[in-house]
Length: 102
Image (tube, rainbow, N blue to C red; front, side, top):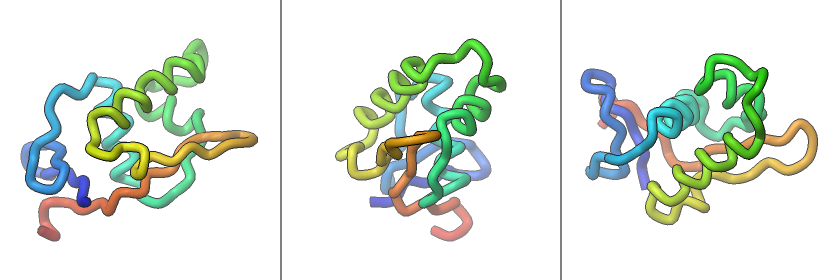
C-alpha cells in the first residue's frame, strides 16, 4: 500500500484515497514520517517536528497521536512500528511516494 502526499495540494493519500479527518498534529507527524521513510525516528525528533518543541510534551501525547494515525491508516499497525528501548521512537514502513513519481 502506498501512502503519499501531493506536493501541489498538500493532500495525503492512501493508494488513491485521500486521508481525511487527520488531526493537525497527526497530519504533521505523518508528513514527517513521509519525509523520512524507513528511518527510525526518536520520540524527541517526532515531537519537535509536530509540536515545534520537546519541553512540556509527554510521551503519552505522542502515543495518542500515533494511535490515531494507526486507526486512520488501513491496517495501520503494519505501517508504524514502535521502536522500544532507549531512546525509543517509531519507524514508518509504508512505501512513501511523492506525486511527481506517480
